[in-house]
View 1 (tube, rainbow, N blue to C red):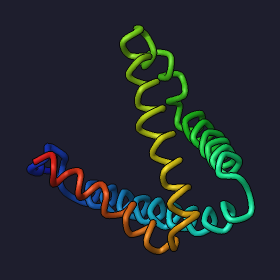
View 2 (cartoon, helix red, strand yellow):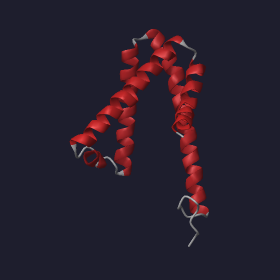
View 3 (cartoon, rainbow, N blue to C red):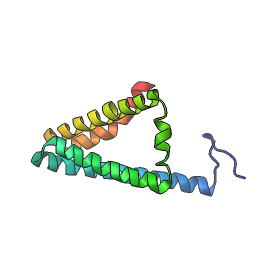
Length: 133
């Protein structure tokens, strides 16, 4: 068997293939988010921000549900909401962590160049991580 790496994952062909797949998925995700911001900038100039956000959330929810159904994890949603505390954490994360975040991004996209918003969104997790150290 392959020796475990520093993070406890086996090294070797399968580990490196998974790493490459993960990096490819991350690159696609980042590119798609930049594409979303570029399109969103155009849309928020023509439509109310609330409509654009509703479209974005509906699209993302449908795609996420399809992916969760495809990999069999859709059934885990019930377990994640098993207690009132768990449901409150999910509700708080969805409201403050997602809705407020994307509303602010949409308003920023309306008033700032999409390139600036994209760079800010890309740097934001790094800044949060640095502040958390």
